[in-house]
Length: 409
Image 1: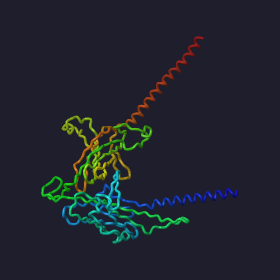
Image 2: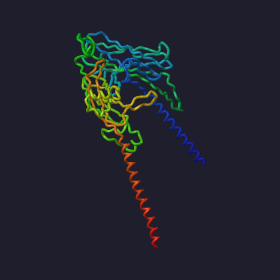
Image 3: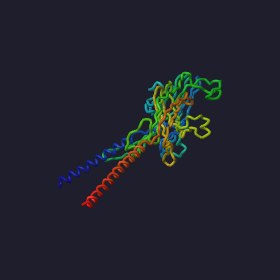
């Protein structure tokens, strides 16, 4: 009995140790930093923020530099949204874009297109008071100086919130100080410009600035794929495959592949048009207009832009759903019909836009899985009905034959 009690005590002790180790590991994961990137769907003037931590505006810095122009200055307002005084570390870093289109940072001066070659910041640290006080907002100034710039330079302004009063948790011999360090990354783009032109252009008024002649903005369409967004219905689980070019039902998902064919960074903006193809499309346009048979898009949507470095391939994606405002979504896909998808893409750098590229494809919305189940059910019903008819006929014949034999006897 004593041996059993000793074994149970050791077992409880081991479980307690395991729980402590698991809790320490979880707190260790909490000590990693969380970064809020400037959202690609945000405009440059919109603020970016970390909930309960920092807020900064603008969310993107794009400065155009003309030859011989004076220093360019951009102020960034940094606001503390926390309930206590905090310290913010500020750093101008290099900007790296991954294959998935995410922004990452690198030490300043590590890339050939580093904005730190001509730009600097006026402060490295900010001490901000608690939210709601006049001292809760500070200013970081980015200054760019260049007599001549022949290519764009890129960087990132990193704002990291340091928590110096993190609590210390004691686990009986193991002391852990978990820290969560939110940070904000603001992309910085320095774009070379030519002298203002005196001629009127279609892109702007007289005297508007133009990109430097050495900058080439060009985007190419790589692919356009459209299909069913998910396999979430019970029929999708029962029949877990799809037919090429056919969607059983909505919502639809469209993905456009893009490639930056220029020599400068740009963001690929894609507008998608979904149109139901009319079976009367062969009629003259005037006739279709008279009878109200014109083809009109049932959905027009802009995708979140894809950041692309030169020669880089990326994607934009949209779905045929839109939010209802109550946490749900509605699907605009028709139940049946041929859908044409137009994807128009332009590459944008600062306020300058490349020539658009159009891609087009078709998808047939056909509830073939439901039709297959209906045909199968109808076939089973016919077979059962035929079997039941034959069975009843055989039973009637068997019951009649003995009666006639009895009468004969």
